[in-house]
Image 1 (spheres, rainbow, N blue to C red):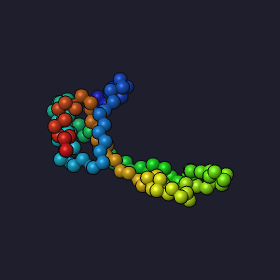
Image 2: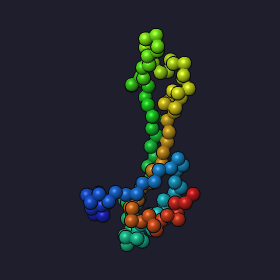
Image 3: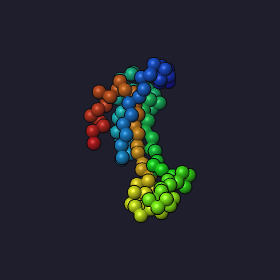
Length: 114
């Protein structure tokens, strides 16, 4: 925990790897094990973490996008003729983020290759 606090105050932030697929438990466990060996500790699970984030790029209910036609009519984007554009705004995306101490990257780089 001391290492984590010191790293943050000295602005040595962890390495974050973002992926479309979840990292398997075996890979995360290997990174925890190699982090334990690198620092000579036994609680690297505090330093290595995987999180999942699902994001909706744009919420059309909270903040609708208004368009104005050449004839000065105002309408929302979802009522537009070009609705194909709104499909990307309505589709949520899930990203998986694996974070670990930046100093350990050279040791674990082989485990991260997919």
